[in-house]
Amino acid sequence: MSSGAGRTILAVIPARFASTRFPGKVIAPLAGKPLVAHTYERACRSALVSDVVVATDDHRVVDALAPYGVQVVMTRPDHPSGTDRIAEVAETRRADIIVNVQGDEPLIDPGTIDAAIGPLLEDPELPMGTARRLIAEPETARDPNVVKVVCDGHGRALYFSRSMIPYIREVADRETNPPCYWQHIGLYVYRREFLLEYARWPQTPLERLEKLEQLRVLENGYPIAVVDTEYESIGVDTPADLERVRGIIEHALEERT
Image (cartoon, rainbow, N blue to C red; front, side, top):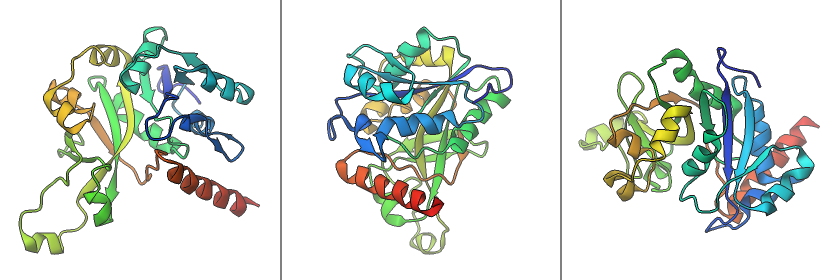
């Protein structure tokens, strides 16, 4: 880890214990460590991040991570979202840029973290950044759990949706058009002051309809820079997801030996 262009960049990993579909998933055993310890270690490999902390609301997470040297901070238990939890941490930390790394992504790519930070280092007017990956599989594009994003010609988000966007009107275009659907990668980079302001805004109409927090930013008229990546986001939402990730890690370990 190192500071990007003289700026202090803090990665915060929200780790709520009481997941609805998979309670305690953030400390589920994975290759000899709690799941979120893998996320932490990979975030620490970022070339631009200065420091990494896990933000939790439960002492069981603190206790599970204690043997692994993971920095953990306790936050209030009443936060409605991970963004609010991260904002609480940002209030007491000296940092220019805050990175929101999802706690349930133990395979997060450090290079993608750096890529998403890049636009904020290049343009001091940008308040926020994220990433996207080209979708090659039609069934993935149709999945409402896979968030899609469309951008303008300058790499700024126009809209995020659970629907297939853009809509291809002509049948001929559907058959001949190359892949044009982009999966949003749930990795966010904020300027600290913007994050603190954003967390205070009320929910917006489109945000409520789509259940996508990032739409609050667009609805308030602020740009979001979006970088392209080949990283395929694999979040752990269920025990089946955990087994899938376990298989990937075990296969990678076998190849090294």
